[in-house]
Length: 309
Ligand code: CP
Image (tube, rainbow, N blue to C red):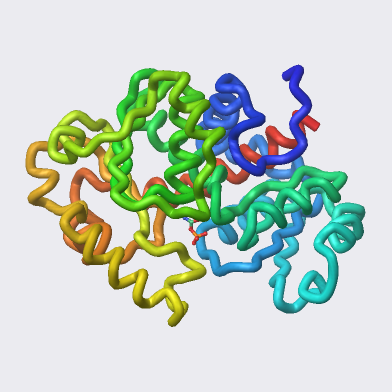
């Protein structure tokens, strides 16, 4: 492709065609993993984690190993990133590796990291965006429907980082997305992203949850509390308030009684909160398959970023 892409901070720098190329590559990698066994021999992916993770870490660590490369897990707390300027440490780090995946608290730190790095920086989820999750989700949707064009997603929950990246991902690839989000995470607000999405005519908000559920091909929900606040005592009151506001909008069998849509969740799941526990393995649920697809989409992200360098 003509556009020089170095970093994956969000999906803004990717054209719709490029994004769909990554989605298609994810499906290809899943079908023919043997084709890619040694492509990253001698290459290293640094994985810097300031926050907890299961899927993002496993997908990229296993993915890089399966591509023949070396994944280097770096727990932020055990490094000198804690003592000094992220810019200088990244200058050093990027001279020793071929990619950096970083899960940081603040997007501003990730932007600073990207500014310093001479290799692609991939956002492993910050307070504003979760682009690698959205790419895996688009892959899952395309696998199920054969296309993304005019496919209808409904997102129910907090307008957060995942919601932002789903709005970007759907509207760039021709999918329709409706959001039902009684609460907006202030720290996730991105007016530019919202304006861009509005211009496509593919994103709408709704207050009619019942109708939106009936019309959706995919019904997606996520945690009501961001991971860094989940066990934070200073967030306990806010957590309680959010549960009160959101509990009536839980995804459960009663809400889904007239729905044939697939059920999605990026995990970790909080059974009994954003979703009733009995739905996790319901026949409409594709949640575990969706999480498995993180591996193939992680590989595709690395392959396409290398190709576009
Ligand atoms: N969905 C997701 O990013 O999972 P982890 O937080 O476990 O990486």
